Length: 200
Ligand code: IMP
Image 1 (tube, rainbow, N blue to C red):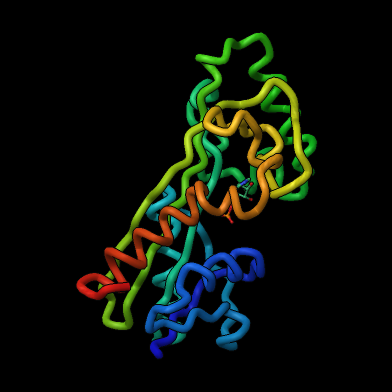
Image 2: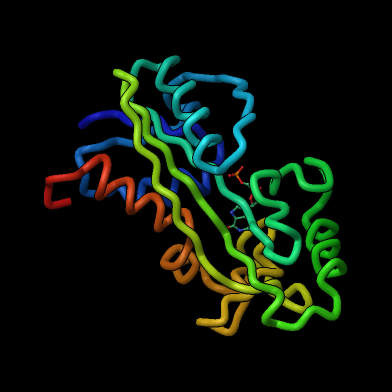
């Protein structure tokens, strides 16, 4: 088994990643499990750049293969905001109830066709020799008229997926993991970067 260190402290993400990497020749460890801690400044200008910055830092610190993600919500009517600033939008400590209500207020009266939005996720892999690969995936939807649902986290209550007729906070974890930006980007990295040329 080859080790991959995933640059996150989020247990939920680790569970999702482990599930996707089951049956591959890779064992995915969190930074904590690998005994690594780092305060990485995410000063890139895109999801791809930020994911690469994090993965590069962890590959350098650990000498192992490192993987990192960067994700967020892109709202077309708001010129792409909150985008790469999704976690910091209106302040890191501001509740998502407030962040979500702010977005709903900004879009008040906007017709469904003008409410298009997407969750974006970039996953970067950096090898100990510095070689790297990044994959980006999205899930397309619309900003709902009002928050709905208690599952998920962050912007899920206001992200409406027409395909389901529900917000991502109303989907089960299984349903969301099937369509999620993170799952799709992880699958692409697994197939095209880490396991290219194998049957996995
Ligand atoms: P990070 O990539 O973990 O830093 O996440 C960035 C931010 O994007 C999160 O804090 C959430 O605000 C938002 N975000 C990313 N993915 C999702 C999702 O699947 N649902 C809801 N919010 C998300």
